[in-house]
Every structure is written in C-alpha cells, then in structure tokens.
Length: 74
Image (cartoon, rainbow, N blue to C red; front, side, top):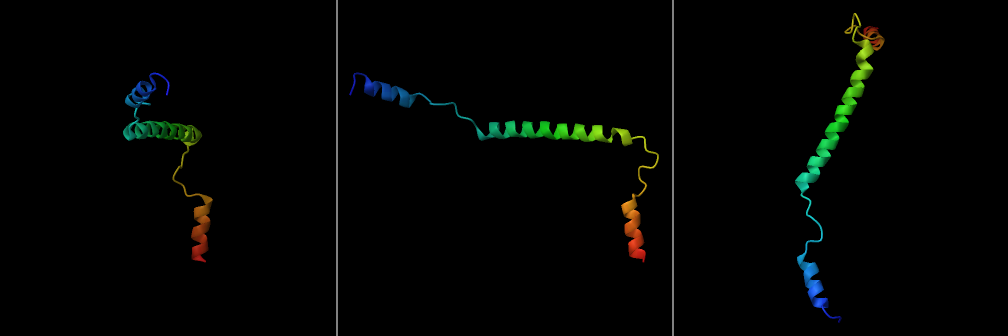
C-alpha cells in the first residue's frame, strides 16, 4: 500500500459525499412546478374565453341539448 493510503480512505469515509436532499424539499419543488403549470393553463383558458364574455344569452342551451330533448319526446 502506498504511504498515507489508510489516512486518505478514512478522510474520504468521514467526509459526506453529497448533501442530503430531504423528501420534503423535493415535494416542495414539484408542488411549485405544478402550481406554475396550473396557473399557466388557467391563464390560457381565460384568454380563450375573452371573446365570449359579451354574449347576450350565455345560458341559452346549445343545439345538442335541444336535439337530445326532442329525441326523448318522440
């Protein structure tokens, strides 16, 4: 064995190889990422709905509801 080999092995064993990452920190980073993604989706949905905010009758049933009601009455 070379001179000082045992001392180097013990020094490497005592020194932490990498900082410990807690599971809480990992979940926190994932949660912030998901929150950002959900906020972006919400903004996109709001932008897509902007042209339809001024509709005079927003609760008027669509054609698919009218057809479904007529089929059941026949």
